[in-house]
Image 1 (spheres, one colour):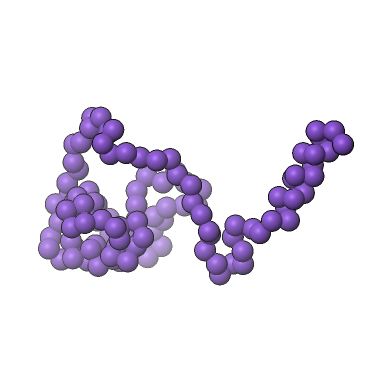
Image 2 (image 1 turned 135 degrees about the vertical axis):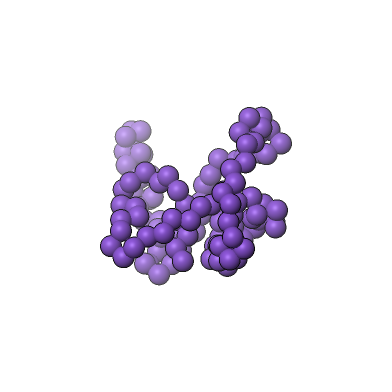
Length: 111
């Protein structure tokens, strides 16, 4: 057996392995991301963005994101920073907010 045959054999073995996504109702089993160490951050981009909000807007945003995986692990101060950076954009029925395959430029919280 030569190395090309061995490579094809290993590819065939991979195809037979359990898929990562399973059936449509299951969540993926793993996510890979580059490690980030905040201690090594040079701090150049420490300028905070703050968009003023009413107490009602802040409460609605906090309620809308409280169960979102992305925000669940934030402490109160971190969540306040994230909420400060958010801004409200009102839309009317039929308005296009974002199109599929567009580059993401914002994080949307739909209320």
